Image 1 (cartoon, rainbow, N blue to C red):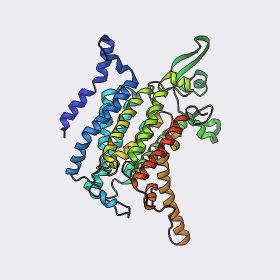
Image 2 (cartoon, rainbow, N blue to C red):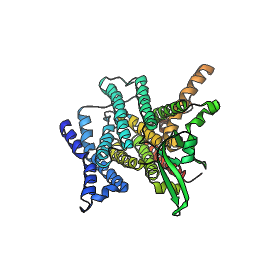
Image 3 (cartoon, rainbow, N blue to C red):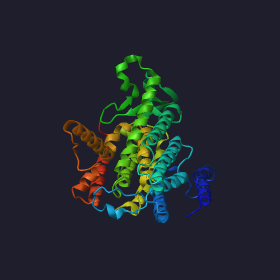
Image 4 (cartoon, one colour):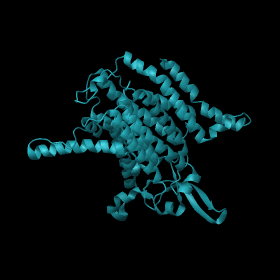
Length: 436
C-alpha cells in the first residue's frame, strides 16, 4: 500500500497537469497533442479509463488490506439465502470509488470551476460521514453505527452548502431572456445575444443571471421559479423566502437520495450498478446543458461552465464500474456507508446544480421504490398492530430487494433486473429533454 506522504505528493503533482496543458496550449500550441485538453469529450473519455485503471489496480490491494485488518461488518441473521457465506467480507470498500473518483478529477478537471469545487467538497463531506458510520460499526461493535441525528445533520449541512452556494455565487448562473430576468428581479451577471440565421433582426437579447429556477419535465415552458411553490402567498412572496424554499429543497433532496442509496445497498453489485447508470444519465445532462449549441437545439436551459461537471461524472462512473469488479456476486468487498451515503448524496447534488432535481423521482426510481417499501412496511405494521393487535406486513421483507429474496429469487437475478429497470428509467429521463 502506498504511504500517505507518497499519495499526497502524487496528488500535488497530478493537480498541476490540467493547468500545465492549459499553459502549453496558450504559449506553445505547436507541441502535438496539447490541444486535446480543450475538449471535454476527450477528458471525459480519459477520466473513465483512468478511473477504471485506478479502481482495478488499487482495488485488489485495498481489499486485501481491509481483509488483513479484519474490517468486516457483523452480518445480521435475517433468514436470507446465502447470507452466511457473506460473513467476514470486508466493508468500507467505498474507499475504492472515492480514490478512483478524486484522483482522475484532480488530474483532468479544471479545479477552478465552481461545479468541480462543489463536487469535491461534497465527496469529502459525505465520505467523512459514511466513514464515521462504518468505523463505529466495525471498530466500536455498535450495529447502529453513527447516530441518525448526526447523519441527518451532516446531510442537512451539505444541503445548506449546496443551496446557499448556488444562490450566492456569481459563477453559478443560467441563460435567460433579458425580459424574463428583469420581470422576476433576478441578479444579472452578464448580457449576451443569440442570433438566429445570422440575421441581427432575428436575435434575442439574453442575460446570464443567478436565479432560483429549475427544469420541469414534460411541460412546454419547462422553467419553474421556486416562488411558484409559495403560490398561496400571492404577490406578497418575498425573494428571501423564495431563497429559503430553494435551500430547504436542496436539503430535502440530498438527504432523501443519500438515504435511498444507503437502503439499496443490500445485494452484491446492486447499489454500485444502479448508481453508475444514474450517473451516466447525469453526465449526459451535464454535457448538453453546458454546451450552448446543444442547449439551443434541444431548447433546454443553458448553464455556462456546466460541461466541466461531465468530467466529474465520468470519474465517478469509472469508479462505480471498477468497484463492481470486486462487488458483483460473490462480493469480495462491500462499499459500506462510506460508499453508499456518498453516492446518493453526490447524485442529488449533481441533480441540483443541473437544475434537474424534479426528475429525481424518475431518474432515481430504484432508490425511490426501495425507500417507499421500507416506509410502507413500517407504517402498515404499526397501523395494523394498533388496529388489530398484531402487526402485519405488505412485503415479506423490506427493502424491496429482500422481499424478492424471500420469494426464492437468487440475488444475481434480482440485481440484474433492478439494473434493467434503472436503465429504462434513465433512458426515459434523458428522453424528457425533447418531450414537452
